[in-house]
Image (cartoon, rainbow, N blue to C red; front, side, top):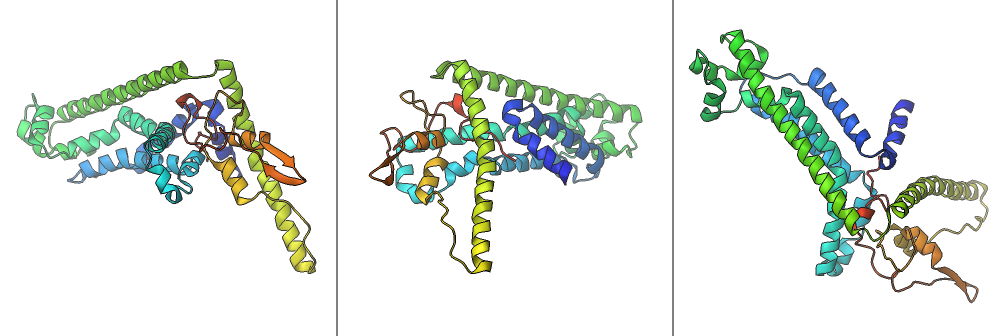
Length: 325
């Protein structure tokens, strides 16, 4: 359990390490599945079996990426209670933009799975030998000495139990593996190209400099880490006070905790503005907090009173845009 916790703690730091760690872990998982779990049935289930192993784990990783992203729940929390605001065109576009940013992070693991699986070729090889399309079977078996027998027994090739000569079976499987690897490299190239184009557009439209962006990323990481530890500490103190009051039958000590409204203010997605110097919703809340007439008041500027629902794509790391495990 300690080793598993260590792996999760390392994965939490993927904002600094980049997405390489996620891709590496996914590739390792695919290799284990391919060599240990996957066994092509070599019957009419080849197509279904191969496609399930190729696509279903990728879908599961995609959904897991959405579930483990803090930004997803910041976007959807209370969304049904703000349906009137959501119907506005600007708010709808802003929500779609944030959802796209979350998707770019969540797609890292599933795209890595599919790419590595295609380069490996086992899933594709099993699936395509079970495809029931005569045109494709004729294409794969073209030039063989026994074309008809090759088409009829194509689904048995991955297991080597066919009566077709071994050399011809080997050639057909090499062709299928080559097609799979070509698709895998094309997928990797398209992902890298898309990432490059999106990064260039984001940097070009960024309202802040590269060094400030680097500082912002470091601040967001530190705030997130300290928020986790500080909330755990405060929750422990509150729990201890309540237990002592219950078992000792005494009045509880006075412990201040933020109100629901305060939690909502720091839990919303941050809206960047060049007119202020806030680096998160928590930073903005603290800076606009003032004491007046011996009462705790919240002084909100025009910018801070707006809903925090859109910001440039280059600032996706703000408010824990990373996938959190």
